[in-house]
Amino acid sequence: MTLADERLKELGNLSQAEDERVLLRCRVAADLIHRGQYEAAREALAEVWAGVGQKPAMEQWPPAVEAEVLLQCGTLTGWLGSARNVSGAQDQAKDMLSEAARKFRPLDMLGKVSEAQYELGMCYWRLGAHDEARVVLKEALKPLADADVELKAKIHIRRTLVEISENRYHEALGILKEAEPVFESANDAAKGRWHGQKALILDMLATADGRADLFDSALLEYTAAIYHYELAKHERYCARNLNNLAMLLCKLGRYEEAHEQLDRAGFIFVKLKDPGDLAQVDETRARVLVAERKYKEAARVLAGAIQTFERGGESALLADALTLQGVVWARRGAYDESAGVLRRAADMAEGLGAQSAAGRALLTFVEEHGERRAIPPGEVYEAYLRADRLLRGTQDAEDVGRLRACSQAVMQRLAGVRIHDDNFSFYGAIHELEAKLIEQALDEARGSVVRAARLLGLKHQTFTSMLQSRHQKLLPKRTPRERRLKSIIRKDA
Image (cartoon, rainbow, N blue to C red; front, top):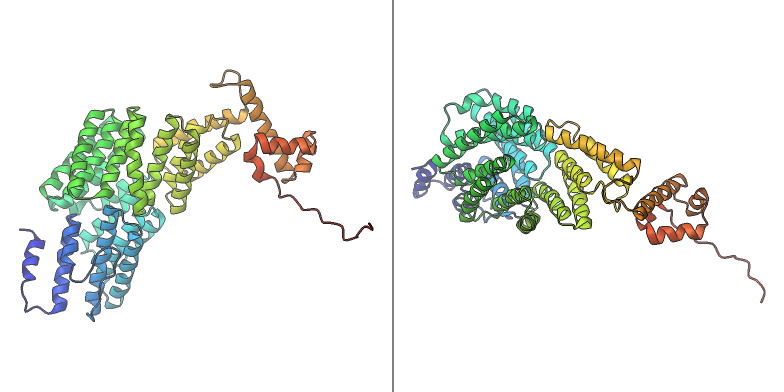
């Protein structure tokens, strides 16, 4: 019998005061949330909370009870909102968790303040706001005493998620080692988390350094995580590690095994009625299909995942999925759609503070469209410079290698077209050179069409015709036409 089961039996004791029963429900919910049983946790809180999108009903409880209810309802809103992809859920969770922290602070319940901040950091991370998540999680550590070892370890684990999202793998591994002692004698659920997080970091480091021994270690750690989560009956976390294992198998070219693990993970998430995590499984499957060059099937699978992310407001996951969609569309010849979705992915990720995701979207733009004459060389160059800025602190060797390859592609593009280039055509080369000269002239003339035409030795009408017919993408560079004032002197008839 679990702790939650034992406490649920206590709810039958009608002699308990109402606030004691509410606190008991909160403790049951907290245990169920820890086990990933979000629907059961929602049922445990049913008397005080109507569900995601609603604020709990406060009935003149003591401040400590009100704060605990807000903490558990806010925590569950964040997890359920992510699992179900509920739009706005993370913002609602943030509001409740922030209010809970404010209520705990004057009561000197500093451990509870840290717990609320710890969950608040997860909300920011889900939204892709990595800088805010990093700050909040560090704040959560400050008031904790030496005896608060377990909560410290949990916060450190969450901190590694943020660093992994920004490709700072050595920092993540260092944080994880700080928390190692508490996991040595922990239960199966905690051991599963430890092994799963270590596997994820080793997986990323193996990819960055190209070390086969680290790949082997990561496989073992994922297997250990799945084993401990199965013992703990944590199906949701077991499935998430199956998804991660599938991605690693894809990197190793073991596609059939990857699909098998994704089938297992998908079955669990369907059983749990979890569209959010199921969409992440679909996104991983699309990556496997892209690796297999099955672009049509990848496009179909990915479309459903993107719709789910859009409905739920999971912007960070959406940005990554859109970047993959850009690749798929480019490989299928839908170049304009691909370029548009990659621009959207980069802007979305950078706006959220997810710099690595934004940088990777821009690198993908250069890789897939850098040689296309329909894309001006200046735009390719700007995309590269922006990616270089966003990925400046990356420790991912793959990203560094892509940056170098893209820099060479950009230099070749800026150097001009050559006869032996792929897809060379005489008229295409002339068109590209013409666009470069017109853009330079407009820049030097500060948008004045008359002065730009004069610099190129063209008539104003000829220059305007070229802009409007062959180089419409450069029209925004011209200054708006000035309307001529009519004479105020009236001529005699």
